[in-house]
Length: 428
Image (cartoon, rainbow, N blue to C red; front, side):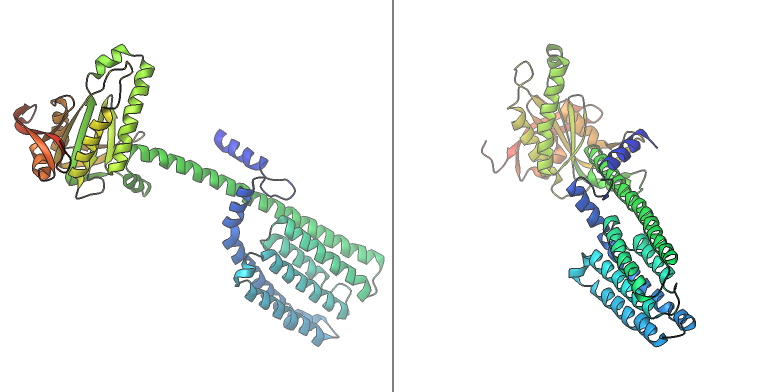
């Protein structure tokens, strides 16, 4: 057992009351009861059904053992008791009684007790039904799911009733009576001991499962900060080697102009706080526009639209994001109080996206579209959103652009590029 598991188990045990086995935290207790409700209801119904079968199953033995009052004994066992149990079983299907298992179980055991006490009164053998009642006690404590405290209380209450009937219904010497009583006490104590540890283990298992669920939620939350949610679901489903081709996507790169010079003028802690502030604002914008943050490298920030889930307006979403990033950055200052500028580059087209890494996952993109978007950013002007001709052709009906003409793009040759200015619906 690991250190974390031992600590969780220790905390769980300290939160359980030793006598009642209830959780100190009322909310946790309610969650535990809710988690057990359906299974306890099924087990309660099963226990009543088993009681009907066992009760009727002993009728042939009554017929063979008893020599007098046979008809009365069989009527009590097969008729009255079975009718009571069947009625309780039917009541367990009603909404009102579903949350009152202790009442149903207590009624069933009380019916057993009264039936056995009556049959004991009419039998002609001093030990008939006494050992059978011990089975009733153990059955209640071990099998009926109503909890340690309630089951113990019902068991002792019914035992006292049954024990009190014995000396009034037959002549029995003190030694035999004490022997019977000691058997009843021993059966109650053994059943309570077994039930106590069974319920305690159930509660500890519940706490451990809750801790595992919490850890899984934290792990998933951390993973979704690194990977898109749909990719996380595929990984959790056992899918490996994730690599998808996307025919229609838009990629954006941005970096901070003069970041190296800024970092030489400022303390490292101030630079980290600065980047956290800038990227935090960008993260909010990314979420607002429904696109996917891919990664950051130093002061560079990479975004893609149209993946991992396709969307028809991926180019528009990324273009709107770029304009908002420019506006947001204009409101920021570097740690030394100077204005901040960024460059943004965008391209649209096909690419491949997939998960790389075993211990540290990374959702990354490959393809000519990625390379072109990177070139648009690195060769762009400060404070401008430079886009490829593919982006212009796609968005020219909705956005205003400034033509830059043909420029030589590293690795691509001569390309027509444009500066994205604003939406056509916005004033210059």
